[in-house]
Structure formats: C-alpha cells, structure tokens
Length: 168
Image (cartoon, rainbow, N blue to C red):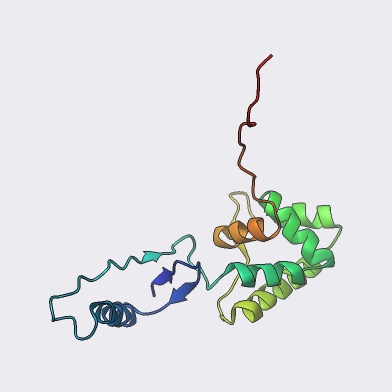
C-alpha cells in the first residue's frame, strides 16, 4: 500500500485506488465543479511516497514529540544510545547493564507506545537487522530518527558565518 506524505508532514496510508479517487476529487474542487468548464486550470498535485522502510508508519512531529516526552528510565537510555549509533543486543545489554529479557521488555514497551501515539498497529520506532556473525543490530528507523532529532533538539544547527566579521 502506498504511503503519501502531505505538505504538513503527515503520512497517509491508502490503496492506489483510494489515492486516485482523492486526487480526482481535489482536481474537481480546484476546477470549481466537474472539471469540464475549461475556465480554470488545475493546480498540480504532487504526492511523494515515503519509502524509507518497509514499515514506514504515520508519523508527525507532534506524535514524535509526545512519544519522545513519554520515554523515561531505561527506555530513554535505550533510545538515546540508538540515536547515537546502531548497536548489537550485546552492546546494548552491556551499556545499560541489563539482560536480554529486560531488553525485550524495553523494545516491546517502546513499540506499544508508538502504536498508541500513532494509532497505527504496525508502528515501530526501532528496527533490527541480522549481523553476519549472528545476532541482531538494532537501530532507530530513519523516518522516526529524523523526527526525534528535531523534537529533541539534536538536529545539527546550520553554521552561518558571523555578520561583519573581520579576519585578523
């Protein structure tokens, strides 16, 4: 099913048929009726699919902020670790001084909270991929990481040259 990103950043999941119907309805509204009067030109409608992961979900900045503010304790520590770099389960367990059962509980809780905030049953924050030598590598999904960077003020600030600076 395609995912459509609206100008305000909302991602909508719909079938191709539903998307075509919505686009046609928008075209008709912009033409002022049935679209056959020839007096109005339709404004272009652009739709950019979000394909950053197989399980891309409906994420908006307010939802990401709410979820980010919900994290505490080991959940917060886990997300902070994974915001910095991808890690194996052994690395995470060592860094947080937890065992595999606790890690599983943390991952489950974060996923449950993501589903609650997005109201989307496939919502995920943390992805995983197999390692060549066995085990798993965990990471924050790219579409979520970008939003978390914004809401947590981790986004790199643009470097601007100083105004009226003089080289000495």
